[in-house]
Image (tube, rainbow, N blue to C red):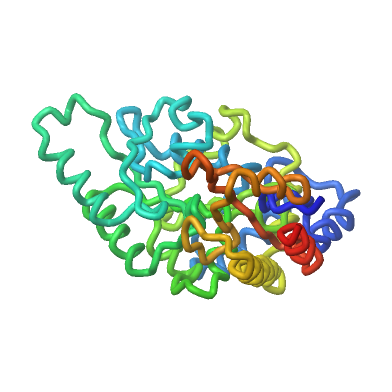
Length: 343
């Protein structure tokens, strides 16, 4: 059976595995203090265009979001996010578990629009009772969004300006950042993100690594004793080398960007297959996640030949499902999908 269930169904890119194997027997210090972590930090800083950025490595996406948000917020603050945002829907209340409320706002095609954020902040501070309410202390967005959509540079500039006017940090979740940066329809660069956000993550788990996310603090704003906060939450990896070596490999010779473009190329070919079979799209996604609407009977038949993800019910007889390409998707995978759709 061919699988498009997610973009982390495969292990790791062969180059990442090769570097892990080559360094396997080296005796290195722990907790991210090894030379490979330092080299990876330097390469990421050069790639984002901020040589003085602070870069830390964590194991997973939910862990990263919960740690960044909880360590940067005061105890009376919450984080504003789109209602469809990952921290709002698919992270099992990890942020709330840390004691901070997710302040859900309306989304448009998965995005938190600047006008929505501005109106929320204006209304919050205009409320005479706001001292009795959870204060908005951070804004969270994901790029790409949970629906595969992308923020434009103008939208990021507007969001950034609003956050700076209210003196709250803008946090961009980049779990699938490579696929957003390599989309043929984006006008946003890695340097733009570094300039316009206060903190963002670069996802490795979904983009070629066995596991791992890099967190980039862009304004000398890394919380004090961040490593201690990481350990307090049970998230400090003793063999931190495993993360540094992987990100060192991903940011050598543009590997991260080359394998991300592979996923985008495969997604464009997948879209053509769906169009050729008359399958409608739920949303126009320019990235590696494709959302289509299947008649329930056809969905049942297709599940016998291909793996994909349930997303939501469209109506009583149709379902929205997600197909995800990744760095590991092949031409043979797409041929198998097309064959399954013919049957």
